[in-house]
Length: 447
Ligand code: UDX
Image (cartoon, rainbow, N blue to C red):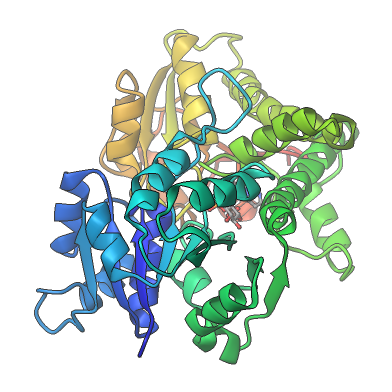
């Protein structure tokens, strides 16, 4: 009989995982403790913008016309325990307020709610990003609190999905990593992932700590690559070099690779910044903090970029001050194809300029509602054209395709000064310069 799967936590990761599991042919029950979220998902609506996710959900959510009916949602842990053979825990692990460490309270409460209902054989699979050592602790918790005892087993299976590509990253991941303690757990997870493995996703079997560390070290490496190129951008700025050419040239070396070498205002979002901080905090607890001191530098290079963008804007205005100046900000999401504004470099820059007296108007194709909620005092416009009207300077801070397709000549008609600062090195400098704009980018020569 086919495995039955449950997914606990239907946020970004869980909603995508649940829909993907249904797409792979399994019967799936998703759980969330927020009833409104469950209601939305039952209607086939997704609480965030993610290309392809709503379509995939609607293809499978029971009760939607023409759906496979394989995907249902509940708020009831007893129902989840009775239904599933494999339970994926997908709740989030945000940064603790005012600390580097990650907040494990959602993971802990998911285990506390599930364990007492596990009366028969079950595999609980952690997917959340956690400090190394958590899986050991949670396995002991299950053994103690699940009535099934050793029959309720734990495995760790980190998730590597990127926002904007979540569906494809889940259905056909670069690799599947499973931390297991028994052949039974490995066998069950091989069954879950039969299709992606058949289609070429490598399946890496390891122990708990390695599985947890694969995730945090992968994110640390990515963050390091971005901060490395941003450090080179700083040097290019001082020396008159061009970081875009430099990245292209070093990227031809296969050992370095071209990806994640786009210099600009740096990384943000709900993962990279908090994951490297939580990793440092955990290393400190383990007594290996020296091994990760470089991450502190990675973090500070990254945060410095935002301030440097603000200074670049001040310089471009030529007045030494933002007072009485109109600043148009194109982009609010932390990256394109997402409406996520968590730790968004774009909004951070916009907020700093606003605090220094600038009159800021922000436009983002998908992130407006979230941006308004988080930064209610900024100005907002409904289109790029409306945002730049009367602007003394335009800042391009999230590299949406829509912004690359803007017509510089038409925008030039409505701004006060034709000055654009590209914080993402994603626009075509010549296109803007030909239309009479002063185009400046981070880490590139001025003309
Ligand atoms: C990241 C990891 O890529 C993913 O594997 C993990 O599971 C979760 O964290 P995500 O946060 O969705 O995914 O975004 P990602 O595409 O990694 O971008 C992170 C940030 O880095 C964005 O703000 C992006 O604009 C920035 N970035 C990325 C750069 O500044 N330069 C680059 O070259 C690449």
